[in-house]
Amino acid sequence: MHHRTSRRTFLATTAVAATAAATAAAVPGAAAHRPADASSDRRLKRIISGMSLEEKVGQLFVMRVYGHSATEPDQADIDANLAEIGVRTAAELISTYHVGGIIYFTWAHNTRDPRQIATLSNGLQRASLAGRPGVPLLVSTDQEHGIVCRVGEPATLLPGAMALGAGGSRSDARRAARIAGLELAALGINQNYAPDADVNVNPANPVIGVRSFGSDPDAVAAMTVAQVRGYQGAGVAATAKHFPGHGDTNTDSHTGLPVIGHTREQWEELDAPPFRAVIGAGVDSIMTAHIVVPALDPAEDPATLSRPILTGILREELGYDGVVVTDSLGMQGVRTKYGDARVPVLALLAGVDQLLNPPNLSVAWNAVLTAVRGGEVSEARIEESVLRILRLKARLGLFRQPYVSLREVDRTVGSRAHRAAADAIAERTTTLLADPGALLPLSRRLHRELLVVGADPVSPSGTTGPPTTTLADAFGELGFSASSLSTGTAPNQAKRAEAVAAARGKDAVVVATYNVTAGSAQRTLVDALVATGVPVITLAVRNPYDVAHLTGRGVAASLAAYSWTDVELRAAARVIAGRAEPAGTLPVPVQRADDPTRVLYPVGHGLSY
Image (cartoon, rainbow, N blue to C red; front, side):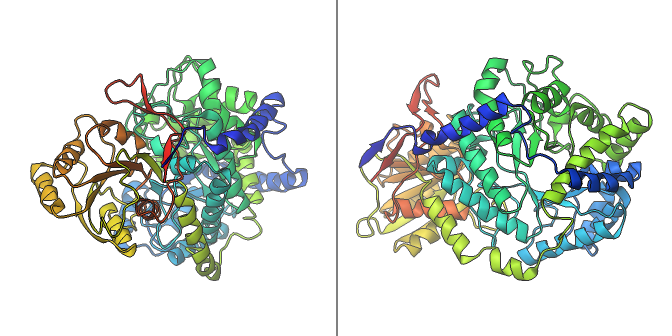
């Protein structure tokens, strides 16, 4: 068994990101974004001149809507639309508010299956083009892959950001994004809120974690640029998020308002490099963060509402003239300091273009109209953002061809070639962290009878099976006899006893762990299983930091999969069974549980057979 401790191969490629960053810094605006085409701008400005104020304001909003169809949703979705938005259907939403974009969610029943998604996209575009102002829509979603995934199987599921960071290949990152982009484009989804450009330097970060490529700013920059190029090369607008950097938070901005204590110098060193790099690479859109960074804005406004951050730094210092979109305006982080009627107005004054998913569209839409009519926001300021949005729509070819073909859906989405590529990429991400007794790879002769137990978090897309079942099935396909038992993230004494009983007579036990802490019942479960004398293998299916709480407790081997989607779990099973090499290395350091000031496993750590 060989030990890898070098700074992964992709760190050698960070000169590309550094060059892009230096170019963007040296010539603000010059390399920051693709220059506008003068003749195209004239056409777009003519479109804007024919819009009413209500139509211009509508173009700024990207809104959720319930239903699988633009015109004929199920009754439950009609009821939800009436309760939350005051309209019955997506088509009615578009005609009432003239929205410039729609965002898809699994829970809103927008993403049942590929043909349905494409038909919905076509229906939305038809409704938008049939009314005023008669321009196509930006249809968006959060398809980061890994733990954030709105479109599930039979679409191709790919490794998420930290898994790709562990693989260390810019080529794999770009290829994954291109595959994802081609499938999104076939579905009529033309703006993806990915990749995540945050540098995860805080292991306790509750909202980013494995959504980040890692903790090294230059490495994150290189991987983020690769994914931007992959998405945009496939005809989908990429969105780098969350500016100015959400990687060092211990509060979830969905439920609170995080405060980042970085100095300006620390921000420049830790958070800024990925954003500088993607701006230099021509990223189509950048998403804001609902975080407070006092060093960047002494007024301590959330970045989404901060003119010093969005205009002063993002627009003027970094030279970005692409589309700036807020994170969801329904999140508590942006609602903590100001009311829902003030938030969209302040966001526009700060420098935002797209207002994403306000909790009450009527309140937000009318608040912007009132601000313009009252002189607080100029109509010229609104037109500036509408022009950026229309430029993006034009660049994506939506004025020329807003519709998608069901034949292309069948040909592209979940194709055999895409799935094979996903499996190959995933195999290069699984990380073997510890194997003190050289147990791995398992032998079908010596370890034929396996038990898989542990946490079963819900599939991020709602379409894949529980992790323990997926792993057991994968081992079965590899020639082992494997059974599964879901013990959850907080197994009680009865569940632990059931697992111990099931382990008797087995040749090895695989435990899927999910965010283990010092007092976690999952750790108690692992201890009980180790006490049976059966070799125990732990597989972290989210954060790789679990191993810090399991080291020295008699565990035979520990691995990290970085997500619990089928593609990553199947790859982990192949690694454990010796059908693939554990090629991944840590893209973040793992600190010791008993002394967080000391590193247990450094960046670049990983074992191989």
